[in-house]
Length: 409
Image (cartoon, rainbow, N blue to C red; front, top):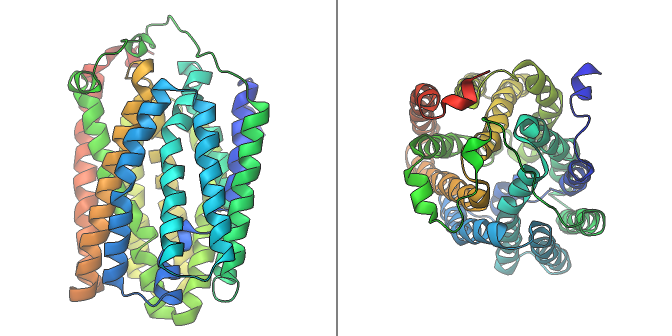
């Protein structure tokens, strides 16, 4: 209970966002199963799926950039509400029409809007919390998302074969409930003002260009690159891993993958408060490095034990521990090192880079998988992981030099 008591004394809006995350994630059944929907339900090849998802990912670039701009310019709560309304409509229409390329377009439209709202969501949490409480606030939001996500992939795996429209309907209703919570229970937010030395890097810089801000913060640029490479590996838990399971286990692959993905969510629920408490004195670059090491270790176990189903769950737990370390470093790193009025745009740039690396990785590794086989594809994934690990190692030293006030305590 002491582990969960660390989430006390945050602003009430943090808890509303927490419950909103839970409700939304309870219906998050489409994106984790997208590869299997395209392959098993629509008969697409691995290469074609890679191309389609890369094209869809490219469409997220303007979503991230636009989302960052509106997060800094307009009311963040309403940005989230408007984006969610479009997503709800898209999923409900998907539930009512036969599965086709129109469905694929609507799925990517929903993903576009969910992506566009993320900078507003992240910046809103930063506005609500002081620097010293920010990791707890982001940890709580992340925990909420995964509490709701525990069962949804397993349910989606069961419904995929014969009741796919129900997946779309549940997703739309869940997002709609979350939108209602945010709209009715969160009022107008006045950002927290701080005067501590630790918060000195967050002082407003007016309308100064985001490019000037980025140029003045090389450690932020290196962190964004590191996380981009990280996501170039991470994305294959939703792409290469389900393809492998489908090849090995046939029609049972979707159910097995759904349950393994649920193990990821169970692990997040268990590990998030634990890592938040035990690693609270560990700075974000060190957390990022630790996360990458654990992620690569988990994937290595999966590859060594393909076909042995119990090992999938062990590998996913280790992978998940790495994910928790990395995610708990992501938003807190950015919020503590950039001016408050530029957070949305920095989040947008961070998301664009992650999207680029994810899309290029899917496209390239998908072609390698189709032409050269599994071993060559996973070798490419590990090369990306090695680059990410090297960048994280450099970041540990650079960050201490560039932001010394964050290391006073």
